[in-house]
Structure formats: C-alpha cells, structure tokens
Image (tube, rainbow, N blue to C red; front, side):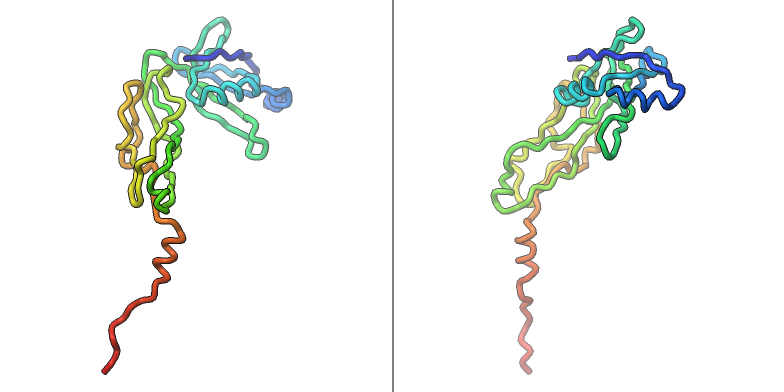
Length: 200
C-alpha cells in the first residue's frame, strides 16, 4: 500500500527561505536514495501529518518529482521541541522489490494475568527494527500479554514469526515484564526481622 503526496522543489539558499516555508505551513524536506539524486523539496505539513496519523510512519509515500514517480519512506524527522511542528524531514527513495530495515512501534494488547494477581506491567521496549520489502513493513507490532504472570517476561525472541517481515533487533531484548507492585514490595520489606533467643 502507498499514498501520494504532492511536493515542490525548493531552493536551499538563502537559509531564510526555510523559515518562510514554515510560516506558510510548508515543511523543508529532502529526498535521496535509490535512483534519485539528493533533491530539496517542500511539502504541506497538514497533509504529511494526516498521512502519518492515518497510516503510520512506515507507509510508502509516492511523490512526483519533475515527472518521475518516486517511492519513499520517512527516514529522519526533526521537530521543534516547543511547538512540535516539523523542522525538516528526510525521505529515503526505495526499491519496492528489495528489503529495507525500519523501526516499528510495539503495542501491548490484552490484560495480563499477572496484573490481575496484583503485579505491575512494565514495558521496556517501545520500538523494534524489522526488515521487509517497503509494502510489507508493518505499521506496528501488537504483543499479546494476556498470559504474562508474575515474574514473567516477553523478549524479542518470543515474538511469533511473520512471513511478511523479519525482526532484526537483538533477540534477548526484553519487551515487557510483570513485577510485584510497590505496595507488595513495601509490605515484604516492612516485616519484622526474626532473631534467635538471646537467653544465657
């Protein structure tokens, strides 16, 4: 699946042009990679936000650059810390028949049995690296924690195999675990110490 995005070529000098574009609701960007020379472009920020919100960060975005259809992925994003507006975006042109690596969001689903038993669910890994052809890159990976009990954990190695993509992150990385709640820990720590008799 891919979506189309209208882009315009832009000048890179003077640098003040970038600020002018941002004031107009445009985002300074660049496209580079497969069969494309590095090309400065500008895009509508609202349209880009809409595409990413509805499709996720791994959607293939097709652009028309000087009559040439280019399939791209969002590669790097710079945002303003205070306003959260895009400062700059780098798009990577990709070969649709070759595998590429991308970061994918991890989403925990289900109510863990360990939580029902008084534990706390802690998520330690929020993204994971996968390898796939561009059209098969997942928007997100759901991890079912329903059967996770107290003291148990899920690692990257526990993820089920998927024919569309391969997970390339370290298999030993821990995704989530159930730990004893703070209240239970405090109760355990507050138990009086039992000592032997001191009678002589």
